[in-house]
Image (cartoon, rainbow, N blue to C red; front, side, top):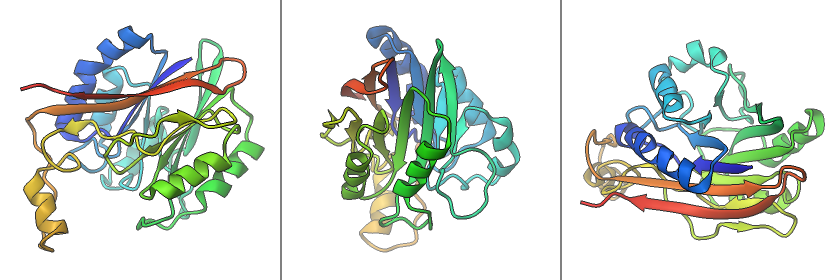
Amino acid sequence: MKILFIGDVVGRIGRRMLKERIPYYVDKYEIDFIIANGENASHGKGLTKNHYFEMLNYGVDVITLGNHYLSKGEITHYIDQCDRLVRPNNLLKEFPGEGSIVFDVDNISIRVTNVLGSAFMEENVNSPYYSLLTLIDEEKPATIHIVDFHAEATGEKQALAFALDGKVSAVLGTHTHVQTNDACILPKGTAFISDVGMTGFAEGILGSTSETVVNKIIYGKKSVFQTPEKGKGIFSAVVVDIDNVTGLAKQIFPIYYVEKD
């Protein structure tokens, strides 16, 4: 089973990159299943219902979220009707929707789970490790289990992956919007990368214009990150090839594509 996992899709440019690049990579790598993190897909923060369906129309099979899961308030009204949208599984407070969903692809079961990290994140959550252990122990097992670990600290991401090595098919980091150079298969067969990276505006910071980010982070000014409507795009993803019988990874490699001028 070849899975294409696309890193944080940011704004209109990110959605455009899905439309333009997914057909190419599906054909090139014979992709069977596509997951994309969409927590920044609507104007750089959150996900609207229209953009949820737009991403599905571009070929995405499942959309995961992250710490901005509630940034577009309308999500509470539509998430229960969306069977391909996975919000964080380890939220402390009650929230509609599902944090882990099983899909059937050619008679092979694929579980997709979204969890938030606990280090340097504003959202208070249950332990990502113990929430996943509970899920693994209590739910009917799927052949393949992909975990989108939406977290800030690379050390926390690595620790979770090693702790779950051999128990899940892949632990794929999202949130930092910068692709890391550590894609690998751990000793017991779990694929891992600290961060898949970002799909969106290539010439700024985190998918937003550089000046709005610099004004806030460097100069301490009140500044709202602005996500451009037009500009050069970047497409960040990984391809994971997983054994259909054991559910363990055979290969993982990154995709990092930047549009030319």
